[in-house]
Image (tube, rainbow, N blue to C red; front, side):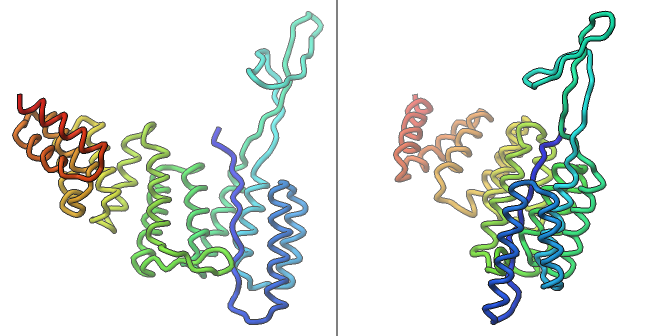
Length: 299
């Protein structure tokens, strides 16, 4: 079963100069946050009702409803089985023959509510396309509960928006996100790392989608090289390491990767060339690696 997550979206302040409005909105958000953390669906519903009556145009209501639907998606299912589950408390029953049966509960997901959570975030993004928390919330839901193609489409839409707004994103209390591209890339790198070991193809699709919009991204070019290397494509790995080196010629990690990849290709002359370049680094660890490799290759 997919991990059950409670996504808590930060409230964003509407453009208003009135102190009373600001305090009211913050109060609603704090009550909402407390109710969500307690996973109290009724309390969340009541806060949202009051919030919507007072501030019906508040964009944060989209996030609030999304959280409410996510909470409602979690349901407890009672199971009776002839086999006892591991690491779980059970109620043991015996039938007329003396045979034992085990009753226990587990959490399950109602996908209708997950879909409603996704839909309300999509509506929010139609009106507020620069709310990065809405995008991230939608992406996490799609990644956890939907198909790979659906997730890649969300990434594509998000990346497309990032080129339009030049990564000028909004977050909590309508606060501007500092270095929006870095936040975006860090999150995408998290997506990549989360699937890399389990599904190399999926990881590759994430990387390719980012590179479609940011072809000179050092981080994702390096990821592409690592994927090629793990897939046994040494030439593909080298090609991408060289692209990274061209963009960032001082990075000792990349220089070392290039040198080592040439070694794998049995091209010792090229490997030696890059190890000599690596020996000029100020990084003591990589300087030591370079000197050792130069000595071995020169013998």
